[in-house]
Length: 100
Figure 1 (tube, rainbow, N blue to C red):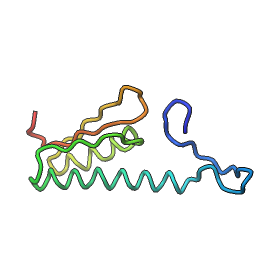
Figure 2 (cartoon, rainbow, N blue to C red):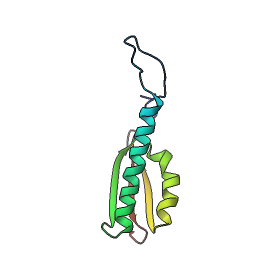
Figure 3 (cartoon, rainbow, N blue to C red):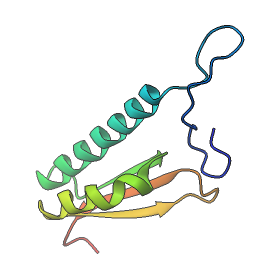
């Protein structure tokens, strides 16, 4: 895990048993998963199937939020970033733009 962010550090070092400690592919898969979760929540809200969806425990929410916020706004959906108490994980509140 990264020292301050709680995110996995990108490394290509090989451990004594020959396995990589963590590779860039693992991080890319996690980012792809979080993007898919955000888009699914935006789809639900934009379709009117939900007025609000809370996504909790996103490791990369703070990185994804600016780009995803713009995409959501184009569909009449608001994304609000909330940082957890430990500053490690992030929550996103996905809601219809007219919900207070």
